[in-house]
Image (cartoon, rainbow, N blue to C red; front, side, top):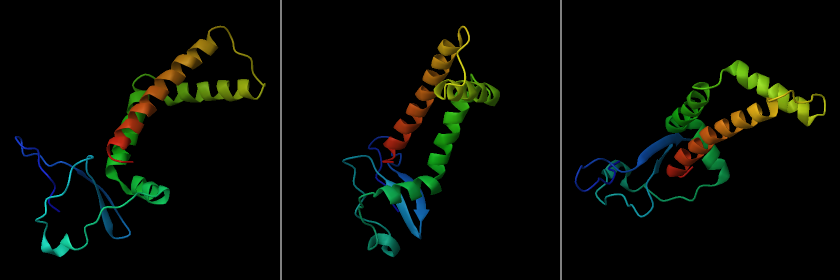
Length: 134
């Protein structure tokens, strides 16, 4: 597939997301169209689609781009917190939510800082996926 190109740098615009059930899905920025002169082998099969939730889920599961975004979210969290830290905060949060644990001095604040940090990483990941239409 020929993708559109940036006018000056001639870099391709768009991203091949994944192939699901033999169909390759490509994301293009809003307002961007594919060049008309596509290879004859595929030109008749190219079409715009409306993503259903099921198709979006399937593309996310198959996309190496989404996999990389998910890994980078984890890397962001791990840059500051270990898996042991995350497990500790999880136990504290669940314990408090179930009424089985009471925060010790400073724990509630630590948990809030951790939660905000993780949420910022997750928000970044969601924004990156949204750039791909997912």
